[in-house]
Length: 324
Image (cartoon, rainbow, N blue to C red; front, side, top):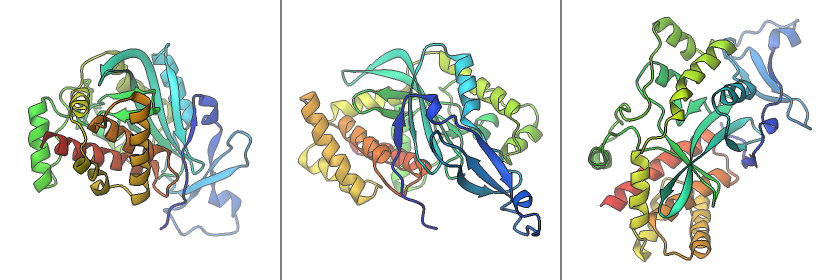
């Protein structure tokens, strides 16, 4: 099925995305009909500010909506000093970057620690924390990594290397990845996550039968570790990116990255712009940021989930090239 083309909008306010959203049951609006399609029982209807009621999707009876207001309440409970950068689409997808005042230096730039959460009302982008679903985090298979925010291009950069303990381990995995589809190990260096005591509760989350209270409690537990500041392996890789200059031959890498041709062209233009703004030579750091900027600002039929998947693949491919 072809997905609707959309361009992410940018806001720094919860109000833009915390509008009412509720299920409307097909049986209620079609009382004279027998609904045979059991996988399509409820309409997900939202009321964006200043807009009409919008049907974002048709879901199964056990699909649970996660209203953005529930996320806001947990964030406000945990963190008193933060700013927001939110990218959202009219099709009901959200990337929420919570930016903290703590800074770290990468490639001579002062960047901010952050937490990136994704959500959607159309079912196309799962709820994630730092790129991981609640289910994966609750069963103990992964832990929340890191992310950083770069003001220059308003990029929220995910900690794609944080599931590795040492740089040598990550480099070894990159080598294996070039030959096979090597799976990433479970994170050992990220914040410790306490798995649920009852398998039934994990199953409950997995099948989307999720109450607002249970969701907020689990989200709170997943995010509380983000209050601690710790060095990350991804930041080390970013430093390496900065030290690795991009030659004329290296620029051809943009054409080989797993992104649409038009996005590759926009990334090339962004790379040139940042060179002029910073008065610096091109580097793998600027190249990765250029691709990230193109992925999350361009109009495309890619869902936000698709964009993050491509961003991760690009990060690892550039890392493999830079360490070669």
